[in-house]
Image 1 (cartoon, chains in turn purple, blue):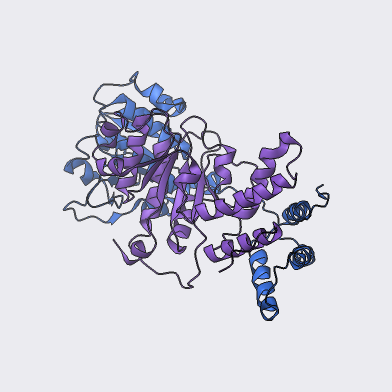
Image 2: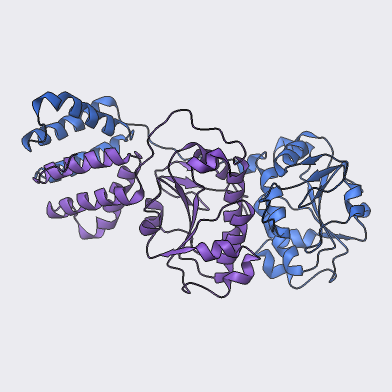
Length: 246
Length: 246
């Protein structure tokens, strides 16, 4: 719609393990009100399509028709450079926490596509889902009554995003965007295999936490595709294989 | 709650001829999420109290219990100095039209209580209702798909209002600072030695540039001391030494 929108695509809204079709429909409606159409569903509980979604979308059928379904969060965001995870409350995570307002500003300023993760209705995102993201988005809310539902969280984020659509000011410095998530995942998998072989992961009970720590570490930089390629060359060299530098 | 709130009361949310009790409950929930509690109902279609409101309020019962019912809009806002009317689309009225963002700023700046009118679910406010207001509030919305429901309109207005209140202060996460440069240098030296041994640095003419590229890569994250320690453990593991994790 604007110059900015042409170069920086609107963010994808990723519903992770959503439970009710009705809420998927409401989220679609919330999105389209503010010009978002890229809906992605990760392992929706009741499958997809879901007959309860359409009526709740109140006419936002185009969003539902284009919705894509993925098995994992990693698959859903593989083409995105900036991953945001929405959480209701603070968690013990060492990632920056921003408001929807700040997130919207960032999404409009950063080259490369963004994805915003929303957790299941009751439980919210799990720690492993949050680990995929570089940034946490939290809506500042009444400390004594925090009860935002899924569609409400989506609408607040979409609303803030829409505020900047008309502004269309290009980013001042042309920085390469972070590599798509899939490339980062490939590098992390390579390192995991090497560490596995080196018996790094011990004791077994701590393996998931250790892997999460490493993922957080390696997500933090926002490395570009070129940087990820260089690092994969480093890893290959350390593994004694011929480096695939190019 | 804050000095501002003490002198300038939070705005009243006035639902004019609301139809469904469920939507009254949802509006109450939306309000309380952002610290608003003054709910006023003008001629609710199905009377008051309404048994469908409670379950939809998801715990925001205090708002429903304190809700007051009035026969007319004029009665409902008789004690308010600033009346805002929400409409989805601009109308041919000769009143200022503002966004929720601007309205929130005005409400916090103007002495005297404010009220915000929301119309019935299907039809919205009538011309006579709008005539009571001095200012129109319109949410900027997708021109091709404007479909905000009552609770969504309430939540956007309440959310914007809450931004200026101390209770909604953005979550602060204390992130650890980047490690001192000496620690980073130690890690880079360790990696350099390993890559040297793996014959990564080749041809000789490119060694300085390659080392600079790696340093840039590894400086970019701003890793903390703990993260640098973890990565040195990773490197030690890959080098086949006992990991110095601690």
